[in-house]
Length: 123
Image (cartoon, rainbow, N blue to C red; front, side):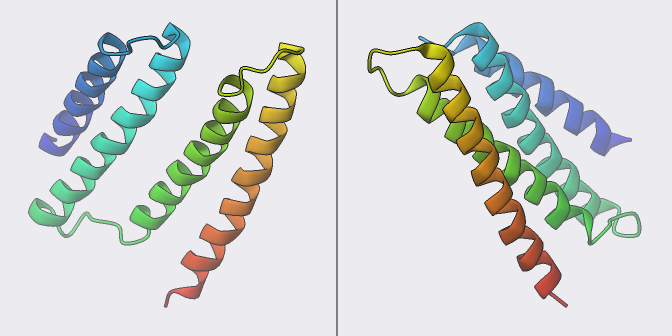
């Protein structure tokens, strides 16, 4: 129970802090970044709490799969954002978003293959 309170407290706190400190970012992107950062920190605290204080409930397979998922999503989103929004060349914005989305999906697939091989290769 205490682990869940730590998870939701850190998740919500980091989400709100990220949105408040967004600077020049769009509100949508700040919320997406806040959700992912809160999810990563909250899940890390939940896993540490379960390992330290509730070792009988800790699942050894949960750590690689959760962080693998977060790495895949962050890589795809980051690639899309860099290509679609980081390039300030004149041109059609829709085309940049489509190219960025396709590149993000491609890099997420590559990272999925890498993470799956890394997790499957461990005994």
